[in-house]
Length: 166
Length: 117
Image 1 (tube, rainbow over the protein chains, first blue to last red):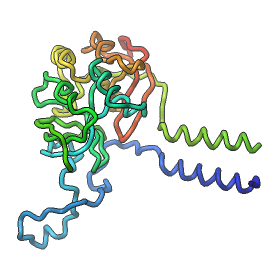
Image 2: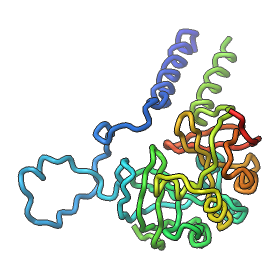
Image 3: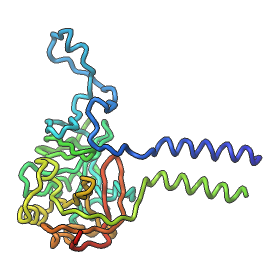
Image 4: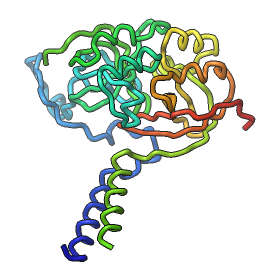
């Protein structure tokens, strides 16, 4: 390959990588209206009657928690992860997640549909979620509960968990 | 020439894949992540200790930026809670490497102490 060819490949790779990892905006509390929502996968119409004003509203994913910090009842599908390993990009297996959790590290939840990571807690503040989550490590699960958001950090206060068939 | 270009390419790709890892020293306080996010308020030291003892994750609230970090230990199978529990209720400095993925921040603590700043 000629030098020119190598230079072109290098430049294009650098441009792509810069575009993917542009630094996040400094203002953390972005207005909800500025957020780009992904189009919903399914829209369930339960009301039957829709007036004109409702028609104009943008359609949001059904179980997306609001960024304002107002809790929302959700049912999410995804998998359990070791939070610290996930964020530091360390490799993890069900066995390593169990080991880490038994050492006291928090198990998190990755919502595969919305591609969001959640810290998981229980509604009773002094009860840790790890014990309830441990049997479900390595499985596809659903989690029910209240979702909160502070900045970009998501929290789910779990009321139910089970094996997901979705 | 060609080899060095390839090395630069691979290094740049590697760094972007891992994200921005920074060595930092931050000043702030230890919080109970779950209570802090769900109620939006800081808890008193006794409540945070009780929550941490029951297994809930502790976090670090950097006062100058308002950022919340999950805490981790550089040794993966060790919990950070033990390291930081005695500093609950104090203004502390935390040294370590910070990571961010999907908007969530983690600091792998290498040192912690009482802050005089």
